[in-house]
Length: 444
Ligand SMILES: Cc1ncc(COP(=O)(O)O)c(C=O)c1O
Image (tube, rainbow, N blue to C red; front, side, top):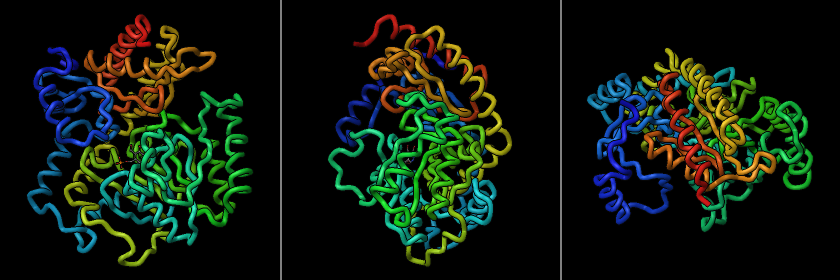
């Protein structure tokens, strides 16, 4: 039965492990609640005390095919028995070539593309930044407020999500400028997604590129089509279309950060496809290999002409991760993208349906199985309900539902793409109960 909570949380075995962790593991990790996983299958996660949770977090939008999908496990096992590593940087092996071919077949741009392999989202961004500079000969980048692109020093310079992620780590890579992102719910000017296209990028076009940085010195704009850590904010199609027009005018590349939104999560292979916009480079990670480490920077072939020695990674494109990614792509194509679109629409509608019942719900938004709920203290002022958000996430956990916060006051539903409609209904029921409790007894 999912969920099935048998002990107060954390249970005794979980608490013992948390105590050991506190002594030896970096305290920089953000642990929203004390989940200590023992095993998992599909959307069910069992902790070390035998409690079973319904997973709508998927290891931060990673376990796309569900936990330990048998096809993925078999692909990993088969590859592990052949060989574990041979550095695709120095040698050749078929799984890496085949994965590059598969990515070329699904990449959100027409024409030939080539792929660089790393191990994580931040490495996919680092590779994209280096390639953009190398290919254009230009030094600067534009990113968006609220964006999250990773924590290594190049990617961190773009990240403008929470100051805790940057505080104490500066100075950052120079040459990064930020512009406001399309947050239609909070737009101070009251624009709608339709009018946003005409207005929202005015700062970028008429201020930033006029007063601060010359367009012919900008290598790339880096953008998430749906901001993930920023609060599951969906950029209107028109925003991305106008961004593409501006960048085209000035020969600026578009780096599409699909680390969280990519690989079927939104009901399309890549979220940018909704807008019809074609990027120059796409950064892929998280869902690509169902939980095995993998980060890919895929670029139009005419851009990826950097010669041997310019960029490489010992572990990047590890054959076991490639095998997992190939099995993942097969499952996505067979039915999981379709399922994400169908169950995602069902989940979105059900969560929107709770709006009439719960004063805390300000906005419900998303695409496919990338759904965010923004909690506010007052719908008029949109005052952010951050403590309430944290209390709802904890309340859901205590009832056996794994969800995560995003941004200051949003909750994200990013389940494995195998979630069924019935499981989505269970998630919504538990969320409803957790919200009811917090509304009855607010944490302030
Ligand atoms: C959009 C986006 N880009 C980049 C990253 C960084 O990925 P990683 O944590 O694998 O380095 C993340 C991680 O959450 C992300 O959501």
